[in-house]
Length: 454
Image (cartoon, rainbow, N blue to C red; front, side, top):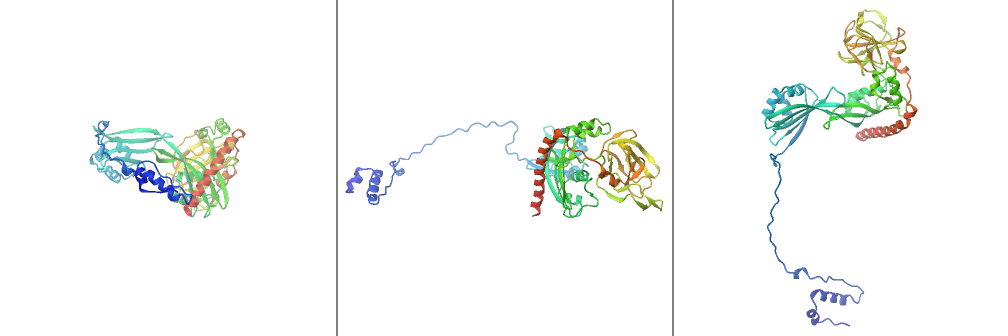
């Protein structure tokens, strides 16, 4: 037995004494406490060290204002914009900048009175203009124009630049309530994309009469962007349309064998520049010899039947189809062909007659403008004229006919009688991989819409 006495505390330092005490107190229960042998912090000496430190020099570029604050704002131009109204909407308070926009020819022509152009400004904290950039799609395919107005030591300067558009894929979906275009407007799907959908599925779906409430559309399409801003839409990459419970799918694919065959045919050589076409996801081509309509999604006012003639005042067979559309609406060729006649002809007014293979002819009448001439080769979908009211017409519309061996045929039945071709054997492996990717993308587009509805 050990005896803990006062001599122990004098003989050993505090920490050692604490260990001995722990051993003694815990010996009966078998537990052991471990204590540190380091000196107690309260016993350590305290000292203060003071030393001056020299800051390193800062290498600042000449003319750089470290306190400058840059603000960025974006807007879209309107046809009614003046220099003052545009800058005010952008939050710019700079009389010198407004005066420059009014005086500079380049700036005036590119901005004022031009609707739909994307504009970004950079200002300081006082809303004084430092830089303005405006972007719009150029006439040349695959590029866009950029107006740059920049403040320099000599004052504002402007320049026009050309840059490449960047295509990115976008997903969208819509459900039909009243009409296709009302649904796509609600879903913020561009009209150009909706129009492509009607063209692709026109052989299977009658978009004028067969749509039902609850029909669903999912699309994957190209957004054409400049400096990160959307400046337009490109090609529809894939689409799915559910009509009355039946699903129709399509995707864009470039089949090397088909492109080569097109280039060898003088009637389709002009169209071979498209280098591809639309197919079902199991590999069947959706490209038909003729489009379903010569006017992009317009209303039929008179079909291929007997009717009371609005001008002659008698019952007479109507040998074509009338499409109601505003004056100036583009009219396109429904198929590859050659212009057989372009001019004025009796009650037809301004008329174009195209000659196609197998003794087919198509007729486009009452035009306000004719954009082709006799003997010219045209491709399917090419803009050949504009809707008008020339000849015997009570209002603007397009009168359209099919003539086969000079016999009139119902235009609404012709497009659905065209045969299609499958993907070539050599291209099937690549096609199958792309089809699989498009199925996933279309499913994702559909789920996005369902989630937003819930």
